[in-house]
Image (cartoon, rainbow, N blue to C red; front, side, top):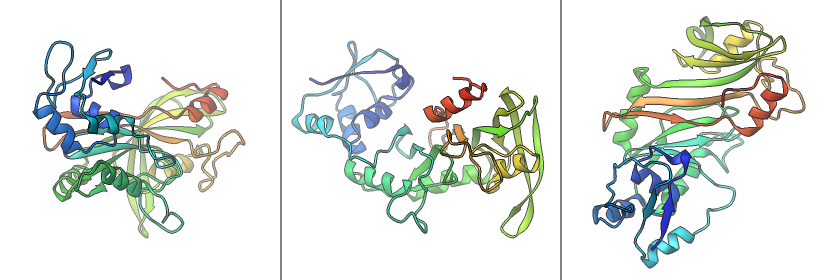
Length: 292
C-alpha cells in the first residue's frame, strides 16, 4: 500500500491538491473517485477531498496496479510544470522567467499555456485550460489558469473588478526609502493612462533597493516604467536602462504572492511563490538580502 508523507511546504493543502501535486500523471477525476470511495486515509480516518493536511501526516493510498504505475511514471524532461495550487475549477502554476505565457513570435515551440495543456492531457482530463492574466516574458511567479469556459469567465471577472492582489519583489538601482504609492501616467495602447502602485522597502543601501510592490492598476510594464521614471530602473532591465551586471542573467522582478477569494467556494486563496535561488543570491551579493 503506497504511503506519502506531507512535507512542510505542502502543509494546508487539501487532500485533492496534495494528490494532484504528488501524482501528476493521474487524472483529477480518477483521484476524486478514490476519495469518493473512501480509499485514501491517514492513520486514523478516511480522508475527504477538501480535508486540510498538516506537515508530517502520512497519507495512505490503495495498492492498485494502475495507481502504482502513475506513481512510478517519471515527469517528461524539459516540460515540467510546478503546480502551486489546484482545485476543481482553478490551477495556479509557477511561471519561470524567460518562458512566454502564450504562443507568440519566437515562442511558438514552447510556452507556459502549451505546457499546462500537455499536463492536463497526460492526466486524462478533457477540459480546456486557459490563463486569465499575464506576466511579462522576463517576470517569474504564480499564473492563474481557469479550467473550462465557466471558470475562465468567473476568474477573469475577478481581475476586471480588481479583486486579485498581486505582490511583487523587485531590485531597483539606488536607494529608495520607506513606503508609499507611486502614481502618474504611463503609455498604454497608444495613449497615456493613469497607473498606481503601492510599495514597501524590504532592504536598501546606496547601490540598490529591494522593494515589495502591489499593483492597484495593471498597465503593461507598470512597475518597470514607474521606477525607471523616478531614476530607479530595475536590475536586469535593458529596455528601461537598468544595470545588467554579469552575475544577473534575467530581470529582477518576481511575483511573490497571488491572493483572491475563490468565486466557486468563497474561500480565501493565497498562493506564494518563493523567490528563485538565483535572485536570492544576487540580492545577497549586494547586501540587500530578501525576507525569506
